[in-house]
Length: 211
Image (cartoon, rainbow, N blue to C red; front, side):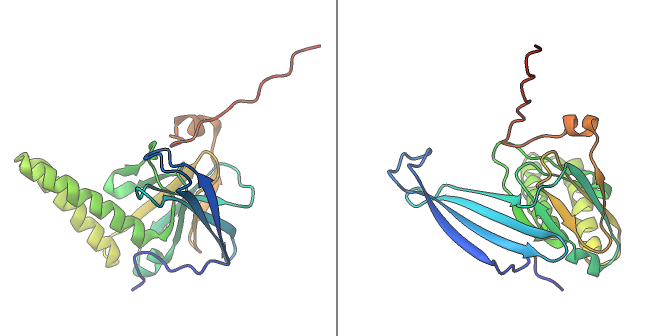
């Protein structure tokens, strides 16, 4: 079985000093570490992590270095091999796990990552376990039962016993699924409008005044 987070060997690594920390105000303690990976049959991807050496503030993002249009990627996970499907998720990427009814939308504190389907399932599992503890404290037996069903389904997907449709959508084209079974298409304008952009904002170009 593959590891939860695929080990990627970066081709290029660079460190950039960014100045003062916006969280703790540390003078000159903020830095960015950038890793550039080349993914076969896809292109270069840059992982960027901003870290404060004083307070430990951390923020990560992913960017595809080749220009990409807004797209939706989809893969049907039907066996353990499909768990190898690589996931490139930027701060503006939305992930859907259809059969689980789970939609992971980017918020202001969203983080980007490069992983695989198994890694995404482990992230979902961690969130569900935290929610289960919370609902158990509230004595919400119905919610606990529903979460247990989702956790069981995740394990069965990982064992190749249950199917799972995984999608990733990004209005900026900085997220993707990469694998032999992956299908993709361009997002429509209507679909783009419905997607969260995470911590980013869309700036519409100003129209030139008519002469």
